[in-house]
Image (cartoon, rainbow, N blue to C red; front, side, top):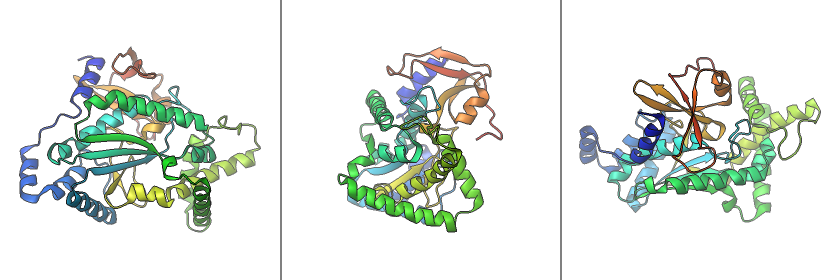
Length: 346
């Protein structure tokens, strides 16, 4: 099987499913609510343990949607941009495709037996906050949103009939800009106080590394030429703005409201359903680069972080032409001849 044949088959079969006898028996004996929870928390997809408080929150949401016969709603809050360090930026690439196909496979057993189906909503951060936080040009965020929607349109014919996948921007939640800015500044002040009084040195350093990676120094403004002390303050402020934004009431409502289940690539302190971004990856798709690896007679999708990409870019690999997705950044794909080893590299 060639890489192109593998990808084509993956696309065409992502929604095909057949319940295992053990799952069919569980559904019949335990009912649809427990079945949905069982599938969502399956170790085949789940990458980390779910904290007890969030597990109970999930169960309440599942009871809510089943009682009302509403679609299961999975919400993924993310940056809504493509990391500037990749040549594919500011548009989507294979990383986004791999994550979408992975999530279709993830919910396929549920939508096959739960008639109301499911919604997967990718909630993109407000472009203005990404400019504030990481100096990412707002027009680049909007270009990313447009390319993400084009990718969804290209894939829509492969979705199960009762599965909806959408990209939404938090812009739609705030028609009143002054209300948005007032609450945002309040939340930033709250997080700033926690940073000064509660954050450990380890947490500060971890956040600092992430902030430095994401900041586009020559982005919306030229931060490259500002004094070093100001650069350090930009790096420090980035995660404070991020965490403040995450606390906005309307953001929390659509991510953590009744009937909503929050998906994430890696764990967050408040709890989430942590599923990674592909069967072999936990790198965030919007800050990752999609490749495939040869595994025996088949292949596996992998999403690489900037550090991982840097560590393997000069290793033997093929760059193969592809006609599978008629969009920019999908004309070719990197194919590695064996499983990559990233021991010690994040």
